[in-house]
Length: 198
Image (tube, rainbow, N blue to C red):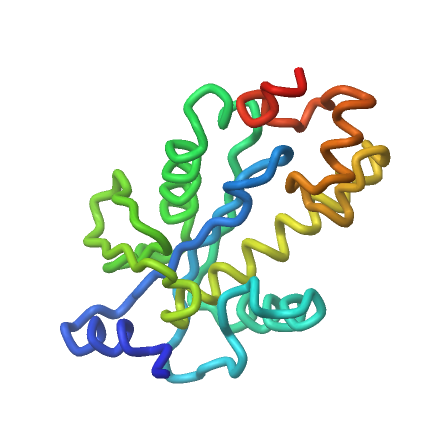
């Protein structure tokens, strides 16, 4: 499968700075949602870029380093649990993506986002369902966002060891839910996601 299908189409239309955007952490009970925006050169492809969920942690780390080194520009942003609770996860994700795009050091002339959402940006955009596995640019964004969020959750695990964040990354595993029932919530839990245990 040609992971540059969308990028080649856009390049043929004269688009020079094509930005891929993806998020990590829409579903967890704890921690921020993290979004990455990245503009990759299309003449120097990194082998192995794919949907971050299909890659091992070690491979993601290696690829993330290469992506950051080769990117024309990249930016990673996060929206904290308190904001997620205030505006809901969909709006928080859109805000996070918008912030990442607007934080790029090079302005994109086209934006491709993973999923099915329209962002409040002035740049032309296209949303691609399962884009992290179909587009090289979105796949690259998914990898650097995932590596960033996993590191954050490892840091939170040191502060709140009772919840096992280093293993579950904030997702609602049986052990995580059991810890919430026993100990209650910590400051990085999303109150809107954990109402039944409050």
